[in-house]
Structures are given as structure tokens and as C-alpha cells.
Length: 433
Length: 60
Image 1 (cartoon, chains in turn cyan, blue):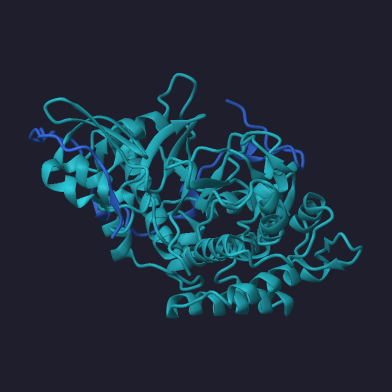
Image 2: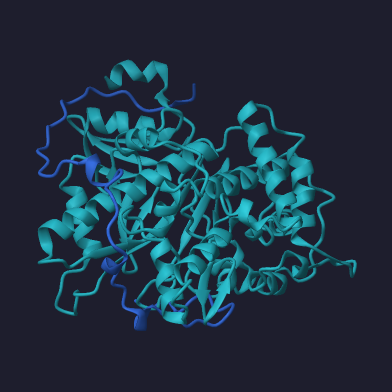
């Protein structure tokens, strides 16, 4: 498979029970602390190439540009750890007694709001937008929830995917209301003649490393198949949003439905099998073949209802079991809600997810050592490495994903329009130092 | 290896910045476990009320 620059954005919510209207906002304090720390690079960017900023009441962290789904997991987890460290600094320095600050990686916050977790994929401008994305990508995005859903309790119901539950339509430019399966935002942060940044907003905030990897592996593969014109025979969906709404509330795979334009009704498992067979034609490396095998086992497992086994890598299943175990001898909606939220805490000492990871109940993709390195350094095979390199050498006047203004005795603009570029062009590199 | 084209110019030495806060890995990797009672979420406000397909009730 081709290398594909990609990344994720997460709006994390910080919650402190003692934080009243006169208290500090932990989201802004966390950002202030980050900018005073040795992890800060310049502006809103941190040394590992990621970007941290305040967005609609949340601490938002966008990962740096990574080139593959495995690195995506590592740098996304590095972002979690950075925020968790800031949370602990705040707890120690700015609260009194046993007051705790909680940080959540989910999509519905304790104060009753929903918020986003977005994927970004660098795609070719040659693929007609949005027509081919509606025809060839929507069947994937609307059915992948069976293994990419995080699970949540909304309106008193357990749903497979909170973001799918909240999705309104097939195509939309909105990110806060009337959201679509395909989002039309067009901010490439790159040479707009060559690339589009596909902004996927229908995905959930995930804790499980394998679920994150599988989501990015399959979606990257589908995008490559589109660029190769290999999905001409994709199943045509009749009512993807209505099917999404039905399936998201249905835990029994035998009751999942996808209505096709020819009048037939199939399962999202069948749609994912279609993509699986196509992906098989483009995998090349051992790592890609292992991911494909994992996808196949996951789809087969869903068809055969091997839910306990699949909970190791499907988050909506594992969260459901975690809630059941937590509420065993004291059932009730309050305890269920508590467990549901506690699963998504990023602090290892309180998080139900991390407790289960310690107990070996969920599978992993990366290691703590790799995550620790990714807290300090960007990946070496994308523009993030070049941006870091330039920031280490120059005084920065202005910084963005695809632009630097440096003070090198004058005011110098450096465009970083190629998200795959890791070095300055040779003929200029010597002059740049 | 992909290269990015830029205009050549002389460079100026980077100023060193003093950072007040140092990242401590020990705080976030394997920090041990606390009792469940320490989880103190406000359940009243935790109940999420949204309508399906409404894209969330995102108050600011």
C-alpha cells in the first residue's frame, strides 16, 4: 500500500467537581502549562509535531502528520499521555486536598455536550469530490462502526458509536450540528492543486489501540482503492443514514441491516467483506498482511458472534462488558453511566480501559517505550520532522501546518506545502544552514 | 526522500528559551491504581440528552 499522510484531532474534556463558575478553566490552564513546558516548540505546536489549542471549551490536540496507521496509534497515544501529565500537574499544584481533575477521551462530556474526534487523510485531488466519495467511501464509513465504534450511553440507550448516532445526513460542511457521513471542509494544509485533506467526522474517540489501527488501515486502503479506480462495483446504498441509525442501536449482528438500491437487504458485515476482498489486492508488506488478517478475523468473528474474543479489539464490545462487570452486584443507570464514562478516563490509575489493558483483556499495537519517544519527537518520515528541524534552527515568528515565518536576520517565509517532504531541497539546504 | 523547496537566505542563531516545567514520564506511565471511590463524576450532569441525528447539543 502507498504511504498516506494522516492524523487525528481529539477534543478532550477536563472535569473537576469542585470547579465552579468562579474557578479556573482546566482546559486553558493545561494549554498555558504546556506552553511553559519543555514539550513546547513554537506557537501552538509541540516538539513531537502535534498541535494543541483551545477549541469550543475543550483542550484539542491534533496529532502531527504520520505516514501510516501504526504510527498514528503511537502519536495519538502520546497526545493522551501529554494531557494526562498536564492534568496531574494541575491536580498537584492548583487544587486543594483530594480534589481530582478528570480527563476524558470520548465524545459526550459530563456536562451534557457532545464533541468531536476527527480523522484526516491526505488524498489525491484527482478523485472527484464529493461524488465518488459518496458512492465509494460512504458504504465503508457507514458500516465500519461494527468494529470501530467506541460504545456509549446516549438517551438512556447503549449505542455502538456515539458519533454515528448523532450523524444527520450523508454530506455536510458542518462539524457541530447537521453533521454528515462525508464532511466537505476543504482546508488541505498542503498544495491544494495536488491534495485534499479528507476530514472524517463520523468516527469516535477510541481508547483501544487495535481499533484505532484497524480504522486507519481500512480507511487508508479504501482511499487507495478509490485512487486506483478499483471500486467501480461497490454496493450502492439506498439509505445509509437510516441504516446507520438502526445499526448503531443494535448489538445483535443478526439484526444489522443495510438497504441497497436494488431493493435487497444485506448486513454491514457483507459490505465490509466486499472491501476486505479489494484490500487483499493491494497489501504488500508483512505488517499490512497481518492487519488484513486481523480485519478478516474481526469480520468473521462478528458474523459468528464471538463477542468475548472480539472485545479485545472492538471497543463497543469491551466497554459493554466493562459496564456489565462494574455493575454486577449494584445495577442501575447511575452506576452504568459512571462505568461508561470511567472507561474513557485517560489517567491510568482510574481508567477502566487501562485497568483492563493492565489485566491483559485488550490487545495492543504499540509499546510504552515507543509512546514515550513519540512524546518528545515527531515521526521522521513526514513534514513534521522538517518543521521540527527548522524550529530547532531558527527563531520562529509564525507557525502553521504548511507555513513557517522565521527570523533569520530578515523575515523569511518558508512554505511547507508537501506533507511528505522531510528535508529542504538540496540546492537550498546549505544556505538554510 | 521528499524535499521541500525554499529560498536561500543567511541564518541567525536560535535564541535559547528557558522552560519552567519539565515533562515527567513517571507521572503517566504505570502510575498504580486508586480505589473506585476516588471517581467522583457528577452523575446528574453526566446523563447525555441528545436526539438521534441532531449532531449533538454542543453548548459553548
